[in-house]
Length: 251
Length: 251
View 1 (cartoon, rainbow over the protein chains, first blue to last red):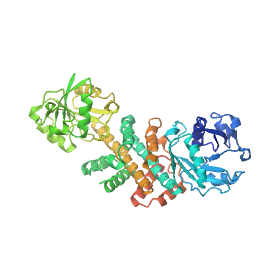
View 2 (cartoon, chains in turn blue, brown):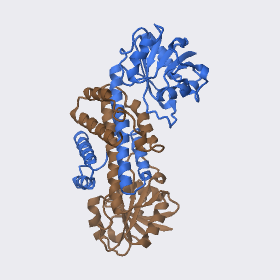
View 3 (cartoon, rainbow over the protein chains, first blue to last red):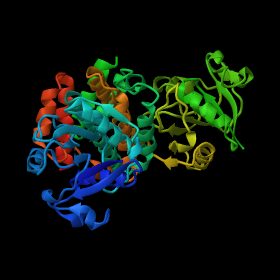
View 4 (cartoon, each protein chain N blue to C red):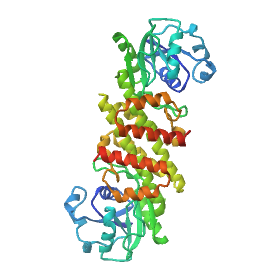
């Protein structure tokens, strides 16, 4: 059984810890955390170290720290030639310190402390410096999710940008919808089934085929009425730019 | 049991026809369609008329035609003082012809011909010219969905604008994500769990609390790398505007 050590105690690290603890096909050997107490609700303190020298042997070390810390932490690791995978969406494969065998283990999902996730539905994007390490990475990933993909650093960068559009920006449009409801004494609950259906639809239709609304059908009367209704200049700008973009690309 | 007649044969009309045919608490008495053949896979031809003079008596007439046709069709109806509800998100209550008792029966959802919907999850926004008609409308709506709301014409206008943001514009962001995947030989399937989780999250967290990403944490390095990566000017503009808007409202 593959042994894995997780370095980090943040949001993603905590979700990975839970996933590996629940996996029958991989063994979580240890976790590194600067403040072990941060994780004491997840696993026994004797499984946590706060010294790099105390790190146990493992088949894979998963480094789940902020992008800015990756180079520094990999430089401090007191061993070499071991397989060390980071979990960043945007850090290139060849950026971390090169005394170990470098790899990427990037779970593409949005993680919140307050919401559990089902790891078996999460795609894991994999990349390895040495081809022979790919099979180890893949075996480890399959122990928590069937959805594994070979993704190059360039493709991962593209995915990270795409994820900002479909996750961060989409969530901000939900906020705009919520604001408009609040300003007009309407429950945001009324929009939730629409939000769910919009997301469900693209499992069946391509986003281009799923596009509807005044921009798509070039209904200028409705567009003008909406722009007149929206008083906030920033919301007006968003409405105008996205309407133009739909009309240009989806006409 | 309430008798309902549906006037129209478009997308929304067809979903309403199916919902009322499946309802144990309302009776679909008849449908008006200019071309009855369009509906012959949904109901027997003897339930369809293509003449206003042939319209049967009913407790409620639901007018599911394009916004532009509502005034003309209501003017042509050969009866008066009956309850006639339109299904438009943006047409004010007092716009249709006033010889009948005017009302609104607006199901807030995105309807596609090729995707079935579960009407019991769809909010129906109701408004009536005469207070005593509201109970009839509500009873009819409850026969196909438990989610009914009293919504004024002004609130409905706000909801329609909000729906453009959370549905039309969100779907366009999915398309941008899909485009970026295609340009980089990545399967769009990798983004689908993220899209689903983004929509699921706001059933538990407010959109403001669910916001994550480089804009939210003011990670200028990542923002600049993303803008450098995006070559298309329109996508760059969308990235910049939505990033600014997140930073201004969610800082």
